[in-house]
Image (cartoon, rainbow, N blue to C red; front, side, top):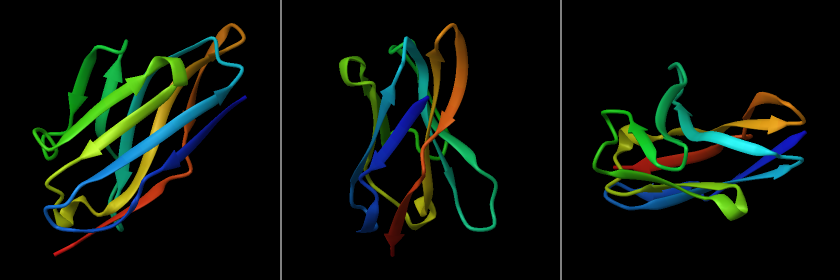
Length: 119
């Protein structure tokens, strides 16, 4: 099994920054892609950013130019640097990875971390 531990959420004023981390552990033979989703109250979960093969990145239009996704392969950790935060960024942020356990690939989700941006 794979465990994902998220950290870095919190309360910040508009214009501020936060950095989220998600560390994967377990019997992992490969892990890709790694990404972040978010879910605001009353809304569907949406993709925020994803990194594929440690190189290619995709971002939601709403966060382009403000958020940066990165990963540390040695630590099986993915980060989300969030700058110029806006109140509409308020949501629970979830880490999502696809990991190889044994000979099969599985999807895993983190427990979620709350990000609240005050105006």
